[in-house]
Structures are given as C-alpha cells and as structure tokens.
Length: 402
Image (cartoon, rainbow, N blue to C red; front, side, top):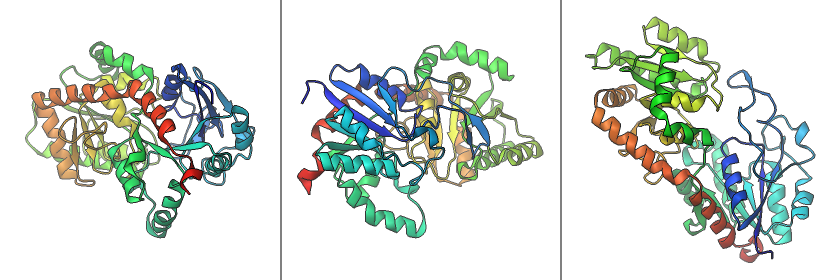
C-alpha cells in the first residue's frame, strides 16, 4: 500500500455541494484522490423539470482535484437506477488501484457496480449518505427498502453522514453507529467570502431589490414545487397582516422557480403581501441574497437534508424550519433553540408565530445569528477531511465481515 491513501469517489454527476470537499481532500498530503463521474448532468446546460428552467451551475465544479468522466457519461441525461449505469466503472477503478472507494449511495446501477467491484477485489467501500427517515418512499416501497437496505448497508465498512437525522435513519436500518463518521458538508467559497463582508454586501443588495434598511427581510430559496410548501409561508404572512403590526415592515424574498410560480404570485397579489419573486438564482448570486436577509425560512414537506440551511447558517442567519427538514438536530447545522425555530410541518399559525418572534425580538435574532456563525465553523473543511480519512482507515472490508 502506498504512503498516501488512494481514495476513489464514485458519484452520479458533478454536484456543486461536493466539489469543495473534493478540493479539500485533494490538498491533503495523506490522500491521492480520483473522482469518477457517471454523467455530465449539472455541468452542461440541462432542463430542470421541477423549475422548468435550463440551467448550468455558475461555479467551477471540476477543478482543483483529479477527476474522470466515465465513457458512458455523455449519453446519460437523467438520474435514476437504470439510467445511471456505467459498466466502465470497474475498469476505471482497477486502473486507479484505490485503497478505499467512497460510493454515493446505492440507488443507481453504477453505485452497485462499484460496490461489487470493491467486494470482488477486497477493497474498502465507504458510503456517502444524506438520507433521513422522513424521506423514505411511501407505501409498499418503504417496506421493501426497510427489508433490503440493511443487506446492502452491511457491504459498506463505514458511512459518511451529514446530520443527526441521517444517523438515526441508519440506526433504524440496523447499521452500527460505531461505523458512522460525521462529515460536515462543505460549501462554495463564495459564501465564506460573503460572510466576512455581509453588512456592506447586504446593504447593496437591499438597495438593488428596493428593500429598506429597516425592513425585516425574510428569505426563502426553494423550487416552487408543492412539496416545498411555499404557500404555507404566504399563508403565515396573511395571518400576520391581521395581527397588530410589529415595528418592522415585513418583506419576503423568494429565490426559485417552478410549477407553482403563477399560483403563488396570484395569492400574494390577492392578499396584498409584500413578496418579491426573483425566479431561479444561480449559485454565484446566492451569497449576496442571503446577506440581504434578516432571517431564513424553509417550509418543506420533504427535505432529505436542506443545503439551504447550511448556506443560511454560514452567512449568519437565524432560521425558521419545518420539522421535516433533515438538517435539523442537536449536533446538525440547524439546532432547535440555538439558531433555528422549528415548527410542525403544515402548522401555519406556528409558522406565523416564529416569523413574528424573529421580526420583533432583536435580541433573539442576534443570538441566533451568532449561533449560526459559530455552528457553521465546523463546515470549513478540516473536520470533513479528517472524517473521510477516518472512515477509510476504520472501514472493514466487506469480505472480512461476511
């Protein structure tokens, strides 16, 4: 075995929230890294069906680390078990000769091929997971997963986890906590740079959006899709209009597009709500938008993790989240009572109360803002790199356990 641990990563496509981790791993003197991409989705302009927008992320997703697009990548256009199937992944791993392979889940044929290659060649397999219990499929599919997932999970010597809820989900599938390694999710450098200049950046963005310096600005960044439940936020604002008004004018900014755009616009207009719809906002423009806000709200019905919570926390925003957001937990990025107010999903009255509390209590808002900045420090990189190394060192080979 070489002095530097040779780690391969097998992932469906370039993902904007994993590129910072790959760069951090590549900088480590202890690691020789290669990332194998199954497709070019996210790199080339593609149609996002839920937003009905053609997009390519406005950030560099592949520089700063060694990567390879598998030969089938150009032909793969959608993410799914059958569509992401790269027979070439085995030969690519053989050429790299890894000591450990980080596989992004097991819900695609390519990932199972990579896992099988690890078993055949007695190489440690580590899974990267962002699942949580409330994101499991409904009905009979849920029972099928509960029956089959433990068998698949046993093939992985370790799992990289993102949150308390992800770890609880793995425990429910009988995976041992001793083989879970919390890997704080990293984020584009643009957010860290904006954090340091938040006040000035925020003032400029407010002026651009026609927001007053004394307005209470609530931000939501989400696809305008039924499962994100943006209508709950608008309904909460409607309830607040009927109450005694707070000292601050309440403004809502929504970044995102999708099938509910026209319905949400019509609702806001009908009820006289002060809402600005920005449409899709690319990642390079997002940090300034967070800087312009006083608080962040995410009302989703189903959210495996919720990277928007990390984005908000890095900038230093207090958060209002439905209890269906996977990023919530006592040691996760969104900590109830510390930097997040958590309300029962669908309870519009409770959501309205949370908004009013942050709008009207400057001390609470400041305390939660400081907590977000403190908690997010773990996501700068060193702890994430250490977790990956520890998982690759500790993970037993599947053939040693069966």
